[in-house]
Figure 1 (spheres, chains in turn brown, red):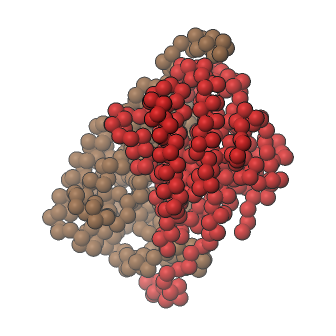
Figure 2 (spheres, rainbow over the protein chains, first blue to last red; figure 1 turned 180 degrees about the vertical axis):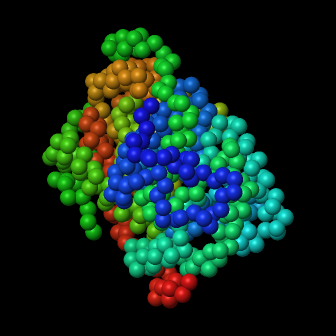
Figure 3 (cartoon, each protein chain N blue to C red; figure 1 turned 90 degrees about the vertical axis):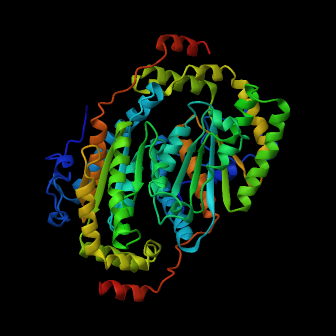
Length: 285
Length: 285
């Protein structure tokens, strides 16, 4: 099966959170597994898009023809301005929208707060044959939930276990889970927020609350470190993607999705009808 | 406001279904309003994508900042293989997925059949700030519904009125509705189905039932003609797009969505915070 030609080492190995992982040790400006510059990275993204497109179409086709129940769930978490939106637009946006289910989780509504924290999440998991993308996720409930003390400490503790049980259930029913934290530096965030403030066509992307969250940077880094320690499992691994260079983060996340699909060993499904017979019918019609 | 440079006449005028419209008179191979060939058409699509992207982002941004409730609903109807999927992938797929809500309507489920025909449709209308795309729609209930006699004639009659009431309600609450029939010739359909049968990577897109529907071609054309006569309104116009040339159909539908957005007179929303104050806060953080 054709795959991308440009990696010097597999980012799915380089970026996976393993035992002893420390977020503080990650270089946010690095580009592991890729030797080129931004221009080369952008060309590589187009090459990867063709690979991703074929694999996604095969996943979808196998569901249509054979009822194949497999699916992919990409979970995106990050500090503000780290580039989640760009991943959604430029990586997943290159895939046929028919095969993608996107869910963006914002501040919970009054109705959502009347339920357990996984209620709104479970409703948005991808259907068989689909690639689901979570722009923020149930991890907010142990990130901002912890940092802002939105729940009691024992409830936060309970949630790590609930998340692991939930993800294990998804994995057992055919979901390949890819969890990504886009990791940028505090300085790079300042530059990106400054850019939003400098450009009238970007003002709508800025919110004064972004600076309030920024003030708790260290608390968030600590909450992420705990997330990795408690929820990085074999079935639902975490990947920390250096994100100071947008082009690299996009290329790496594209590869992580490609890698999940390649492990499914997909091919075009066989026709469930007699091709020659249908060709005769068509010619006569 | 910048718009596409390449139209010789506005397809929104040329393709709109007006009084006395007859589907049988439409040349499925024509390319009204565009003088170039396929290569020029594909280049034009990229130019149009940039225009569409900006307008979509402005629609989305005005909702975020000002709570602007406007939205767009693109309804796609066509005979099999006319290119609905290509429109979804290559026209709407070029837009940021965050701002697009796609709903594909298939054969109704047992639960859906327990409700009126608009029940499943209403749940999928776009939210404020979104562009909704219906791949098939409530019109199936007066197309296959009529041709296959899935409901009594008086119920089919009732539905035209119910559709007009429903769409009027959507229009009054801020929805710009664009209804498109992709119109291909019966010969072109044979070629496209033959292509699907000739290529193993396309077998999954073919269904023997496609030939059964093809056998009722004239009945469907008549059902479409009735749809236009009964449901082409000022608030929810129909456009018949010649679709034997895929590149033209894509370019024309792209323009119809651009046209709907341009009529909204969108601009970047003003910041609802003091920019200079936030710049000071950011610099100090």
